Image 1: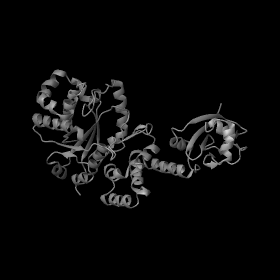
Image 2 (image 1 turned 45 degrees about the vertical axis):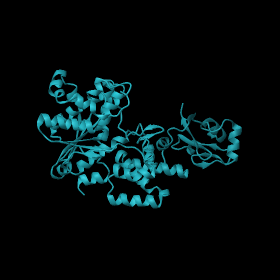
Image 3 (image 1 turned 45 degrees about the horizontal axis):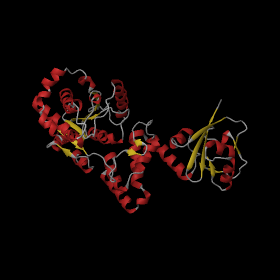
Image 4 (image 1 turned 30 degrees about the horizontal axis):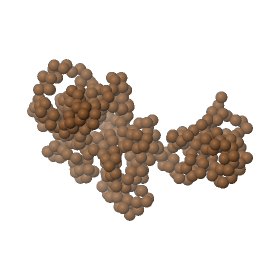
Length: 422
């Protein structure tokens, strides 16, 4: 299957310019996609354009990841309900630094023949002279055409309207394309389907100023089968930064994907072959309760983003919760599994800790009497072991890594107690 055909099979071609398929077949293209630094981390929605660039590179094309250090100071109005708050220069620079590091995980910047590039548009946008920009770029844009764009028209119809700042965004993005075309002979821009108007504006600018034909390809915007926004959970966005979304919870996000979405997401977010995806699709239809497709999706995406070791830790942690066997997990892994569980501390006690007192200090019970009743009823667990003796004393040797007790009340109520010195 040719590259364009594979992208189409994966459902990644929402729209594309005429002749792109032939250009991908006969030439080695340089292609770019932009990432605005509106947060300190990219999120799972960004994986679609990132992996599209990676697929292009695997087929011999040269990818450019453009970080919008300049455009991020303004903000893209495309299909936003209202103008977002402007970030400070310092915030944008900090976000750019984090995104640079993340993008380096997916693209090969040391490839011998087609290395990827990381470029920041602040390099040229922050040096633009207003008069020069209006003469050299602005004159090629019709205000009538810009106002006719659906994304702009929606904002004009709203109560807040649209500011000149955001109205000028398509000109800046078009100028990005022109600069990358001049510097690196970039002839393809990738983006979400909401970027089609901005991409075609850049193509028109290059045609008018350089007399060259260039291309655009837009990817589908992601929504779940239930109609909710992809990548959102009760805890918020699912980030690529392991400090913002722990690898265990990242893995669980993919493991919990709806059956109606999982096959499409296998195509979008993994490099599995058509035969492999078809086999998993068949398994989902015949044995949905086994969730084999979700498990493979979680493995594949977590490996791509966080590495094979993170997959092993996530699967071990999931097994722990299923079996209550904490023996093979470190304190750090357990804290990752239980980041939102109520936690408390207890001082080091050479004589150990009475079980009743430990249950009380953990918050699992409200009184010693309740603790005693819980133990006698068989509902008290420490580090996965049922506690049957209300007079038992736990020692530091019983704690995980000598520092942590995981207390469970009943089937699902967990509490963490950490041993601290001093």
